[in-house]
Length: 82
Image 1: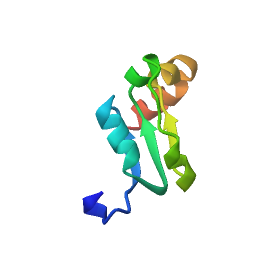
Image 2: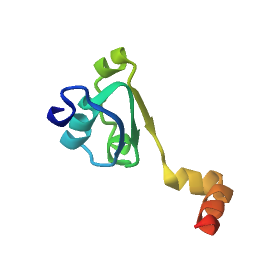
Image 3: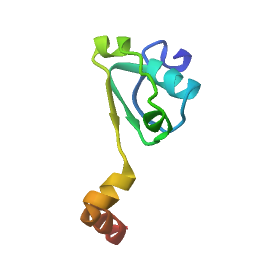
Image 4: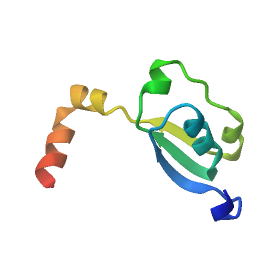
């Protein structure tokens, strides 16, 4: 927050769990978003502070295992494009 003059960051691609997860969530700017790529907090029924949503912050989870399972074509297309 110091580096952004308390504005916060617009996008965080996050995978750490526990304290780092919550610290990152607190650093999201108004109208910013956090994209979760880890599963530890999901599997462990982690708690998410709801107050940042009051400033139109967004949170979503991307589960690559599920993407590979349910839509392998997307993964194949990305691999073949690289």
